[in-house]
Every structure is written in structure tokens, then in C-alpha cells.
Image 1 (cartoon, rainbow, N blue to C red):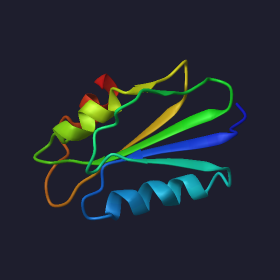
Image 2 (cartoon, rainbow, N blue to C red):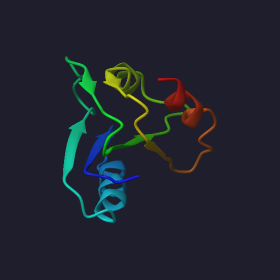
Image 3 (tube, rainbow, N blue to C red):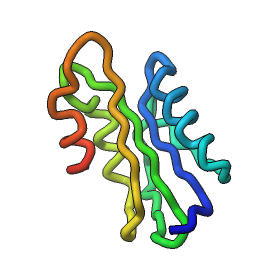
Image 4 (cartoon, rainbow, N blue to C red):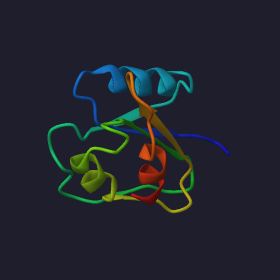
Length: 105
């Protein structure tokens, strides 16, 4: 698969999730389009293609769950067999069902 564009979507109240997904994206050395879903729910759908787009999604785990505002925004991303990485950032607690929730969003 050839990657042309990297789309980053992240919920990062303390900026650590943002830093981590940016670091992952930097390894590809491709153009990056960022969607900060921390304080605003996306108003429009984001259509991603299978031809060169890669989505990297990062959210913190709050009590083992994806923050509700992040879920509402993640549902706005429309992929067409678009490959994606999902990243759950957490502190001193297990991430429980966070990754499963991200897959279902």
C-alpha cells in the first residue's frame, strides 16, 4: 500500500495524545491533515479513500472508555477500506474497552 496522506484525529485534553499520534505520523514522512476533536464535535463528515489515505486515531481512556464527545466526532469519519491505526493513551488505570469502542465508532 502506498501512503499519500495521513489523517490524524485525536482527543487530547492534556496534549499527550496529540504528541503521541504526531510522533507516529512523523515516521511516514508524508503530508498530515489534523482533526483536533478535543473541544468541538466535527460538524461535517470526513471522507477518506482507500487510495493513499491512512487514518491515525488517538484518544485517552477515561475510566476504560472513549470520551463521549470523541465518539460523536469519530462517527463522522467515513472510510472506504481506509487503513487505520487506533491508539489508546492511558495513565494509571487499565484501558478496558477503549480500543473496542474505537473500532465500533
